[in-house]
Image (cartoon, rainbow, N blue to C red; front, side, top):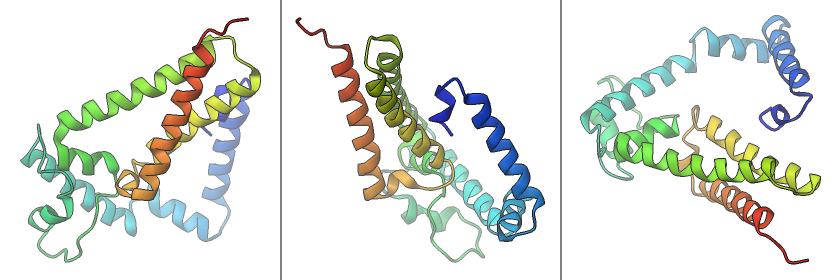
Length: 186
């Protein structure tokens, strides 16, 4: 979806997304049940809301510098409701990072990523590069953007494998942007 929004057929992509969502909402299926469960805050959505509230309480306990890196699961039992027995992660990378490293650390982390992505996207759109380089470069930026959106719903950046993929995509996008903007002798 993010990749498709960069091209002139973006309205078709957006229309297709809305049409597909309408189909999921109306056609009876297991997907319809899950789709409605998410938007009506039933089933696992209630647990996710509880986890979000818990993470926000943790952030309030250490708003500037957090509770310490990699300490979310250590502090979780102190902040969750007493009848909740499992130790969970936040199901939101940003809330979990905010609890661990504070709002200052989260802000600086996101600014750093946005600067890298912004520089890369600028290079692909505002420099003379081949169409293949432009599409591949923007696909990398869109892939990172997709992971960042997924981080709203999962603790992706706490997984070693996904974190390695994330930084590899950013590194490749920055390398391509640097190559695209480097003057070459003729």
